[in-house]
Length: 258
Image (cartoon, rainbow, N blue to C red; front, side, top):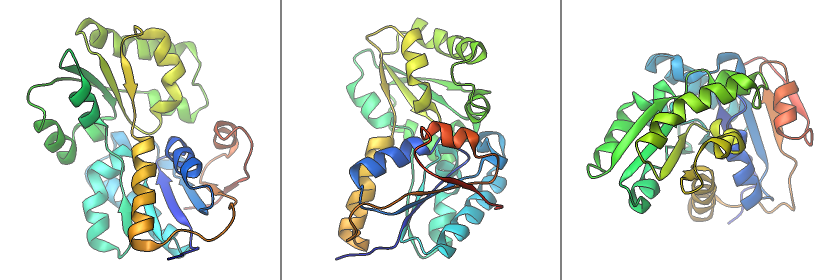
């Protein structure tokens, strides 16, 4: 079963490219269209209604572009809007949630940390997930300001180091042995985070799991591409410079209004 239509991916900015990279690595023949809604980043500070409206806007644009599957490469959009998206649109959606299960399952101290946006931590879906792990103490931390610094291209700035240190210090003190990154922007901070965390603390994100789930759904339900390697397409609704840089200037990024 073949299907040469593209996979659509959207995020509240450039962070979801961390998910795109995992998908592209696993499925290099698939054509991908990536939407960076940087104009409205971060979603984590917005109301549930706003997040649903933005997610629908992005979905409709990707459907206009004939996408066969949509990856919601944003924890905040997944935890707040995926149910509404699945109810409204006749297309398969793959969401991204904080990888609490593997962290809680493998933790030796039974204490894990999660760094995420306010929107994710406040969501009903996130709270339902954490309820399953009553035996694990979960230290939650809102990453205020992190997404904005990443969107501005300030990943290695002193301000970023200062924020990360202040967010991670209480977790280290609480004796976590796993840190869950609950925002698709945050994998770009792993080199910075590793400098702050003791070596025994594992860092975990959802990118690989999302790529594997994408592959599974395509194989079982929709069809894989018959093409030999495809050129990915990237769109942003703000200045394309930071998105180009995070992609190591290997791909063309087009600015469009959406």
